[in-house]
Length: 329
Image (cartoon, rainbow, N blue to C red; front, top):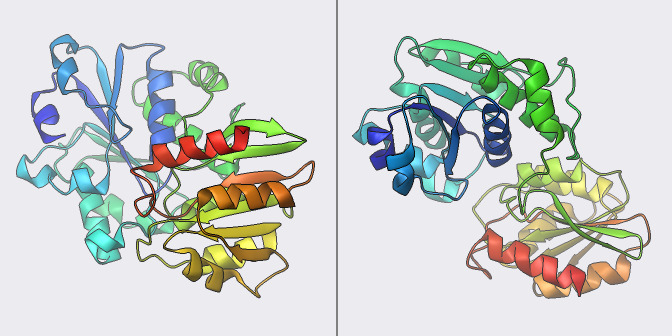
């Protein structure tokens, strides 16, 4: 990222946050591509270094930036010209140690902006309230609370928030709302981010393998009617609290099937707090098999792990692809 940002000849949009940054990055790229030659990369899974010879000064680059990548921006003292922060929730404490250290890494995305650059913050997230005072340039906000909703193919209130965030970025490039709405109306989402993979016997199977935090699983669970979700959750324990997720899942899910390294802590945070069935199973194949036995027409089998994949898989993509195969078998 540092090598690229030092050499990029055009304006860069930098997007970070604890959840929603990949989808917001993709949505932003869809809108900007209506008016500009647009390049999307970074933490979303594509390195743009090899594209440098084809990137021109009148193009736009949209980068998803993780806290791991942002830790090293002080080495070059460069920040993107337009920055958006989706939210700040507990994540990666196994690496950063504290929320303060995690937040400081995130703030590097705007710390080296110029006076004419723009920082866009989520007005609905109280954790970001003080960040505006630290911005070297202009500050704008977005909110999903009172804004006119976009017509989206994707479920969930969080995707409306992602759409409003993408529109807030696009407005900095003098793109009108009708153009943004047209781009968003055809957006089908990203693999492994609340992606419907199959429907069989009246049961829908949704792959949200990219969800590696309890906060993300809460968002996914809230996207479906209460009492009809069979939640598959677990994996590598990043030392995050499962208390809020356990409380919600116990009362909103039909069943919670826990697997992997974090299975017992999640089950402990969920059992006895509501009517949902809570079980610990050996691994993801066992969780899918048990979910199939429990599911009835109208139910949703939701893989939203709330944990990293490293205990049983190479990455979240492998985990999501395995779930999709199991769901379709």
